[in-house]
Image 1 (tube, one colour):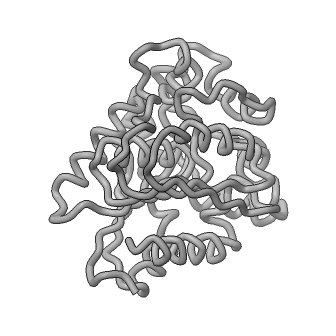
Image 2 (cartoon, helix red, strand yellow):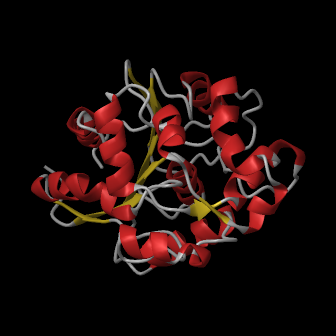
Length: 266
């Protein structure tokens, strides 16, 4: 069990509403934590409201999201554990590297600066926004077919469609453009302080069938931490796609994260 009331902040990624963390919130409360799942800047309180007000999420970049969560974390009495999925995984690495969190879990995280090679499947997903330069300032939505390829490829067609209808929202295109240019920008917002020797432990996870963040991206991210003496662990989930944090197999992932937190005494 966690120390009573240990705060946990969940950070969602592109195209998913914060409410998609609902089952994790319940599981972590049962384990003794005090979890919250705030949305990104511009997100509305519900999926439906966010879909109706897509213009409110447009234009927000990685720094905007990091600063938004840094402000939330700063209001807590103690440093929290931060857990992020996809682009949320990049955000929690920024928070951990900057000393704002006690520990972090990056679930199939978007590539940070220094990850050079992107497999074709990852480029196909990113092209949803990158194909049109104007999308940098717009909100971008996925079609059911795009969600099926990028998130639900390891699921049945029915489950992928159900998750799409239940959780997907429009998201800003800007973070995808920033990530794509990360290795050419000296001050990229996708840069993480991977060398910080005093940061808390980090767990990187990888779904074996993930099209959006294939295992090669997560393994390349792991290599970016090779010069840090701080704890950096890796956990693979064979057979799972990018939906691993919200599909019917989520308990396996959540319980593995809880087990890691107990192992690392955080």
